[in-house]
Length: 193
Image (cartoon, rainbow, N blue to C red; front, side):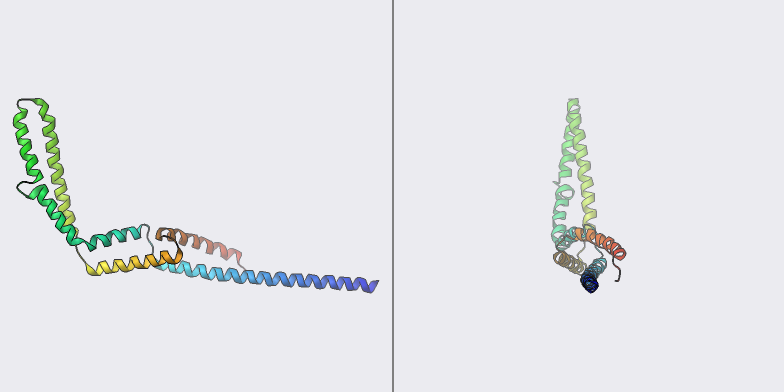
């Protein structure tokens, strides 16, 4: 009986040793898996940091590329509008000014016309303001092939990142923040056996 009790105790200890060995191997696999996930996350974080993402950048680049790709068309169109608004003899400004003069003469006979005169003056002032803004805008328009190529390359790079991660560039900014937080927390939880 003493021998069989000793045999059961040895079997129990052996089973416990096997259970602990299985548990240890499982934990080592878990730790290895966590290390691999951490390495992937570190790589992703470094890649996103190097990308120097900015919120709304893709849309800004697309708009700037569109504008730079059509500088000549924009300049031609603006010049046509400037002629129609102010520079031609029969421009909108000149017509509004002439109409205002006629109405001023007629306003001597009926005060009800005076608000219309004020509206035409405001219309003329709005035309002048628009004319000045268009001139300033046109002066800022410059075609720079190198800048255009740099913008296209940056947009292509951002689109590749979006495709790679399956997220928009703006979502990648949030993902980068999540990775930073996750990696800080994982330092606390991962420890060697």
